Amino acid sequence: MEAQPNSYAAHANYGAILHLNQKYDLALKEYEIALILDPTSDVARENRKKVIRILRRKRNL
Image 1 (cartoon, rainbow, N blue to C red):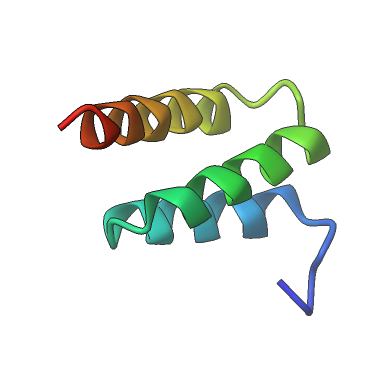
Image 2: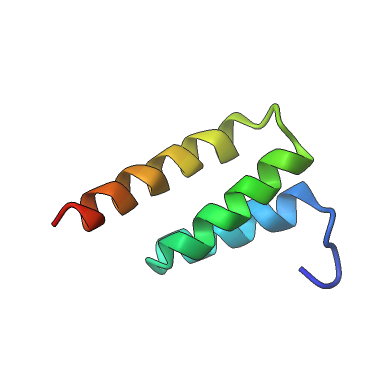
């Protein structure tokens, strides 16, 4: 992120990596930054929704 702090793709892709590695809180933050940088991104929006669902399930256990 240091090299491209304002890059939608960098944040969205990093969010996906964190998501795959089950670091959901961090992934959520990256998806939210990606959406600030590109509010029209359906991919970041859907991935954010998936992470929120996972976090809700984990917190309800």
